[in-house]
Image (cartoon, rainbow, N blue to C red):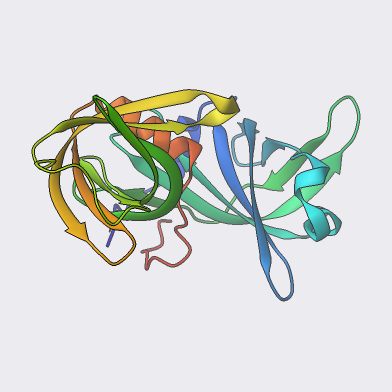
Length: 227
């Protein structure tokens, strides 16, 4: 489970950097829709401003981006050691001119979730596993600040792969190519797949960028409310 740090104020909202990528979950009667957009800024105690997501990515949720609708916002705080802030609030207004923006009420409470170094976060991130003279496609099934588990669609992988240095290549924000350096520390072969446990050897900032680009689903994780 993630560690939730209780704080005494909403000052952590000021740590969200203008222009940074955030995750917005639009709540609807029977379901919800999660999209990524940019954080524009805030007026302390009044409202928070978000860039309006591309309508083509919203589908039916577009009808619920309106005054009074409820959203959940999640963001990875910059240079925070992997802390994620989350809060629920109602939309205050939506503007079209001079720009398409969403204004949401200042939240009554926020949650600050601190990722422990070894907390494994469930993901489904497409990636390529690379070693000299060999590469294969796979999916990152979970990731932490120290390692990840990669499932590749091959029942057999090169022999003596354990302890081998490797690269994990994936695509981040704006089609940016990201390469994580690591070392294979475990191998588990199934009937049609192989599960690779990989210790990450790259800078923590690079891993935090991956978490930022693929904001994880925190809605299923028990958390403590921060006032």
